[in-house]
Length: 53
Image (cartoon, rainbow, N blue to C red; front, side, top):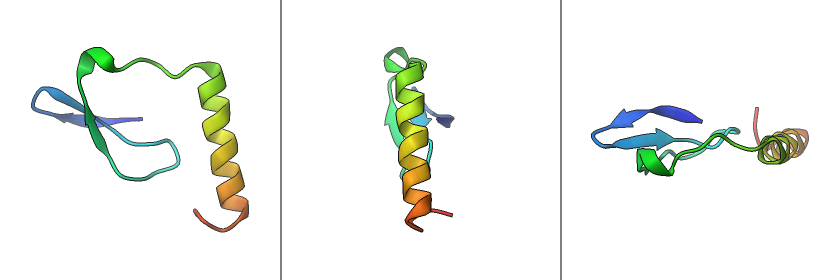
């Protein structure tokens, strides 16, 4: 998920939360449907284990 930008970089954060990182704008792309499904499944599993709110 794009959080913002700092200088020449885009700041990204995982969908389920976590530490931000910087990325060159030309390296950013939309997540594929499979990537979105995988992230949503991982988040749901972590939530069921009580690891995330």
